[in-house]
Image (cartoon, rainbow, N blue to C red):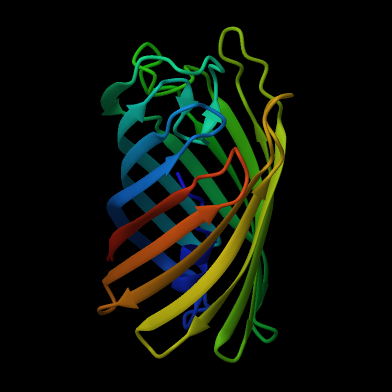
Amino acid sequence: MKNVLIAAAAALIGSQALAQESKFSMTTGVDYSTGKYGQAEDTKITYVPFTGKWEKDRLTLKVTVPYLRIDGPGGVNADSRVVTNITTNKTRTVADGLGDVVLGATYTAVELPADKVFIDVGAKVKLPTASESKGLGSGKTDYTLVSDIYKTIDQVTLIGTVGRRFFGDPVGVDLRDVWFGSAGVVYKLDGKQSIGTSVDVRQRTTATSTSLREYSVFHSYKFNSSYKLQTYVVVGDTTSSVDLGGGMMLGVSW
């Protein structure tokens, strides 16, 4: 769901060294959002991801298996809030089940500890495991290429991302491949807490839709070396953006 780039930076703050030994972590939580996305009624989406991550040296591998619930008039692709059926005023339905599984790999291409600058490059594959007949997914495979940069100055970390997403086209829908990006700042309050804000943008995905632009604020609390809780709120100001969203994620590492 929401690409919380800030959350990734929170984990980086205070430990700017790469993991020399293998490190595993698991994250789960809940993400809730509501928006019209150009339709007559709101679509309410509840997303519960189960994410496993393995890190060693410069390489990070991730897999996310989500539970998904959609309450709305239909046609909204929950993964990216792309409207894949532009018919409005449809009968409101509620569907739930397995969402689209996402596989990802990231490599730290640039590491400058003295300057506190890191640049990651990565790729993701969204597998069409969500039911297309129930309206939980597009039924197509999507691919994403992305690069993230982090720069720390004292208690502040500046973060940015740029990427390209390649959509598979559902039957009867011509989705455009799009550029997207994020920019944000994270402030480290102390050894356990960080706060931050970011803006996310994306090109429009169809000839009749609008671009996406969303703003988020977040708080990260590290209980100890193993447990961390992140909470966030998101709002948008375009037709294709979320009206209001938020969530919390609990991570454990070992």
